[in-house]
Picture 1: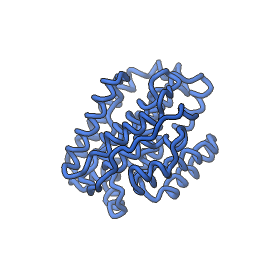
Picture 2 (picture 1 turned 60 degrees about the vertical axis):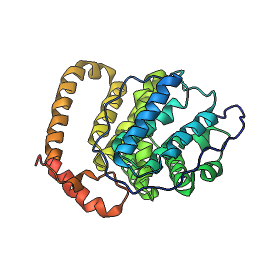
Picture 3 (picture 1 turned 180 degrees about the vertical axis):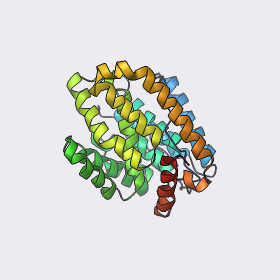
Picture 4 (picture 1 turned 90 degrees about the horizontal axis):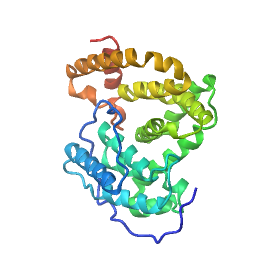
Length: 289
C-alpha cells in the first residue's frame, strides 16, 4: 500500500543514544484510544514522559520527529477500522515505552511500517534517524515476511526458534510482539476469516514467544484476545471467571516480583549477559517463590 506522494521533510536526526536504565516487567492493559490529532499528541507526550522517567539523560528529540515523519509518510492512509494509519505505530510505540524499551527501539516502532507501506525506503529511514534505527526497522520487516509462511500448529515451534535466531537484537522481536498485540486489540474490524487466521497464528506463535521472553501480561492478553476469536462461544461463557482469575494471577506475580532483586526485572534488556538472571527469575516466578 502506497500513500499519495508528499514532499520529503527533514525531521531532526538523533544526536545520540543512552544506555538502558531498566525495563518494566509487563505491558499494561489496553485502554480506550483517542485518534483525534489532539488525542494522538497527548499519547505522544505520554510516550516521551515514560521514556524520560527511565532515560533522563537520553536525547528524546527523535521521538517527536519520528512520529512526525511517520505521519507524513503514511499520509491519508487509513486502517481497516477507519482510524488514521499512524495511530497504529503510535500505539506500538506506547506499548514499548511502557515495557521500558529504550528511545532507539521506540523510534523504530514509529517507523516500522514505513519501508513496506509508503513511498519512503529503508535508506530514507537511515538517512534521517541513523543506522541503529534502520537496522531494527529492517529486522521487523523481515520477521513480518517470515511470520506469514505458515499458520499450522506443527510449524509454530520452528517459527518461534527462527524468530529468535533471525533477530540479532532482541528489540526486533519485542517491536514485532507489540505490533501484533495492537493488531489483536483492533482485530474486530477485519472479516471473520482473517480474524480466525490471525488469532490462530497469535495463539501458536506470538503468545508462546511472549511467554519465553517473560512478558507475562502480554502473553496473557494475546492468549485472551486469540481465544475470543478462535472460540467466541466459549470465550463469552468464561469471560467473567477468567477475568477474575487473571486479576488474581497478576496480583500473585506482582507480589512475587516485588520481592525479587532489581536485576531480575531487566528481562527486556537487549544485552545477552542478563539471560541467565532472566532464566532464574522466570523459574522463581513459575515456582511461586
